[in-house]
Length: 365
Ligand SMILES: C[C@H](N)C(=O)N[C@@H](CCC(=O)O)C(=O)O
Ligand SMILES: [Mg+2]
Image (tube, rainbow, N blue to C red; front, side):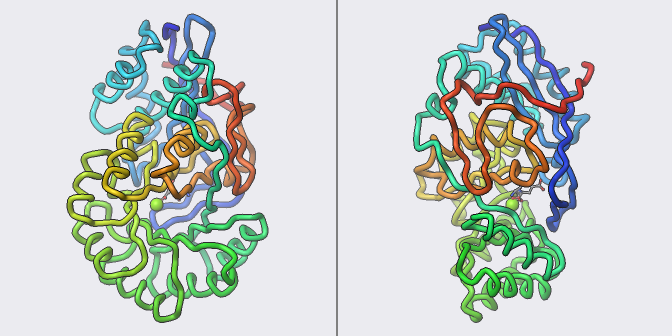
């Protein structure tokens, strides 16, 4: 199975409701779709999110990285040599993790198709049904409470509450949601870097005093501030999770050496795809550090790949935040992984199981 062409397109899928964090507000998935064509007629699919405030990636940079740097290295190569191909992707250029992720996802999709098995089986197998949380965007308190109650009604057992805007209001937000949900869902807090280390410790102690025990606190402080993250981890009972602080193995090893966090959030758009995500899970597992698998504002192409990985690495990836497809107004993918509110289930179709993708505008390269 030889690679003959790599095509790029732009996909826009509106969200059901605006997605709001301490870092940004976004109303649609606007992602680059990668299709890798082969001489056997098989097509591998991938997707890159341009989350500039987190990865630094923009649409223009993703398109340029793939079309001018990565694709020329892959054309004519055999999909059977997956490890050699992922090395070519990873060493093609520095950073540009979302571009690398999209290409790797498509390569793994093809490799699994080559072997006639769903990707999770190629990655080691597992129980193909997992549960995701749902994100509650940071907003007016009444709106967040209504969104949280709606999510519980829809069957979500874990809610990821976005905070990090204003410490006083954030505490009110959490208290109000905790009271309304009344034990029917676990609460994960994600400050997206919005607090100082001291504010984070103060907030968690206030919650503790009020008898509120969130399941975890995600990325309370600035991404580069590992010492600040450790300051929080050392002083609160709530498990602290690193998200924006950890992209690849190098940051994870330093985080573990410092004992700066209890959990790490693995996202394909940060790791540059599946090969590094596997390394992160293995390093974390070796050190007894649990992982969450997360996503950016992505659709059911790249989130499907994350779901396959989560199934295969379920011993280490114990928490799932793959709600991108649930946030979308419609599903652009025919076939593939089934996203039904909290339940994500993978079928037996080879690769990612994607039959076709709707609403993609070709990008001339
Ligand atoms: C969508 C997911 N639940 C999530 O919250 N992901 C990120 C933010 C993604 C984005 O801004 O696109 C996170 O911080 O965990
Ligand atoms: Mg996060």
